[in-house]
Length: 441
Image (tube, rainbow, N blue to C red; front, side, top):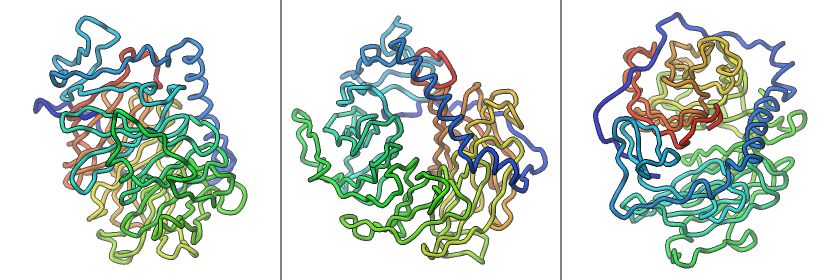
């Protein structure tokens, strides 16, 4: 789906001007709930419980979600609603400032079990836009036309068993694909293979002939994939088990030669890493300028690593915060000047703790001017009760994907001047679930 802003309206977001709430790690709690994997199991079990109940009711049957594409242009968001089929409540979506362009069901993307997670884009040298779409049984590929239409081109099957969890990131002309499925490893697919595909004849690509593969993970599974394109490596995070070897921390994959990926080492010092952003450091902390840094979102802490030497990494700092339940993901505001980052917690709304006690999703703001002493300067909250999940920052805007409230786009440009979050504003949203039947949309 391609989105477009259609008005200049903005919505206010609740924020905090309270004193900083960063805290030292609670290692007793950490040993009990996080090092054991209890919290991760709790989070995943809650999701599976909801999804399996919906499966039993037929909620995820693709026939309930027919593909919708309109030759006469997008469906405008008007008065908070995009009526894809006028008068049909099941095809009417809550929105603000984002239009509906296209929708293609998992079934029409070749995914028979109609499940999926993760997607990532790639732009060819001549400006064509493509997307890789994670599914339970593999990865689908589509081109996004200049009119905002999704054109299905084919798919790459899963490497081992099916899994609801698949993660995709781009590296140069490649898509790097991991999964929670055991024995899956990491698939490396050359997106230029799509350039000459005829949409009338979608291609089923081969795991034996059309990919490169990394099989150096302990059990073949990974929760997520991280890319540092500038330094030519990928990182597997959350590759269990937690109690041996790399302890499900940062496992580095050298992509200098994508046809022959190798691992120079790992960072096991803080155990399990749920997600991370790895970059060359540019920012106010002169001690670390030019080093390779990973910002780790490690279930109960923001953990910052120096990974310049992949064989001997060091932890720069470990910091938690008021209300920490499951530190999930985050992103720096500006990779060219790494002074601030935002962080979300997947379970604080469920536990109803800290700033999320009222059930509204919280995004925590951190001043990382000192990598050794990061400071939580404030936060901002969503406008709908939901659970925040992933967010990526581009040109001063956060694109947030939330369970229960869809895609939210937030203006962060005020944070360098006012890091309390008081000036943060929501620019628009689109909730892709026509009936917000539970928190896990």
